[in-house]
Length: 482
Image (cartoon, rainbow, N blue to C red):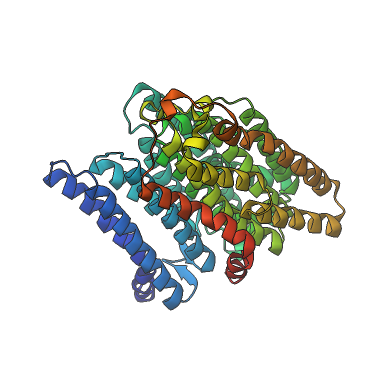
């Protein structure tokens, strides 16, 4: 007992950023309850400060803490978990700045729920036990449901309800799969060698079914087909900064847990993942072709991008896993930059109307913002001179290496169809730049004027897209040391 108490006390420093966020969560709620006056930008400034302090605490952990398990193997702290914590905090900071610079005014509840969502993602990034995976994922889900419906109109309420219904089904499937795995292995610690041995000794059909059910909640979060149906409606219903955060942070952490879980299950998941990734890329790209709303187009784009990340998991080599992490880093800037610039350039933003035709001619009115949006979108295609090209090059290289080692037709099929879908995605992403620069300007777009601060944030999000193409080794060398 004394040894266990000592281990718990020794584990507390590993949760310093999370404990700070819990205190901040309570503090923001108390501040809003005590002071009911109009605070305007104060909440944005305070929340940005909270996230910056949390980032500093995570960086201190990176320098001071020894990798290992916390709280009796419930959590694990290592290079990957700290990297993804910083990833989430950066996405959260961009979301707050996006909301701030577009003049959105929220009550304290919005920021407290956002902090709660980020807290859940930080814990999920360290989860080493099926119980902590489920609990942290539920914190993330409930917070996401609230943020989706926070605007309070009919459209956001409908989107939030759809999110709740689909999320409840995936959560139930995941919990059932976890219960099966516990019955098979007699442990919830999926990083324990005993967990892997028990799965290997079980009939492959039984263990494979249990693993597939257990990861269904993660597949739901990354919007993999067939658990993608909620995505376009939720992204369209939610406020643009919220949709931008949804498209990046929860997906990235879900991929981390998926990598950890599949690396120890030793179930032959590659055929299933290959089918899911191919279906996800194809459905995302071809559905995006027919969209008339920019936010729905970006929603289907996020589905297709998740499929490309799954390609790296299908290869499941050391290079493949490093490529997945690199791809997610590139994806953050391209996607959040696209959402932000679409938001500030849209004439119908106040009505939550992001029709693509509304961008006609705006590139001539706001050339700098138009060029930045074009760069961000072309990065999502994978055009040279953007980091998206480097990410896709690494991705398909890892897949080709897997094919050369195994000579599996599965890898070759995925390689060919992945390249085909990349070509198709060009037709998706050039629609907005074409409207910006090659169509006559509409009257409603003439009044759009971007402030220097708005242009600065756009530059902060798009400059790394080009810089990381020129010096991709900066990010990849860091990832290789995780």
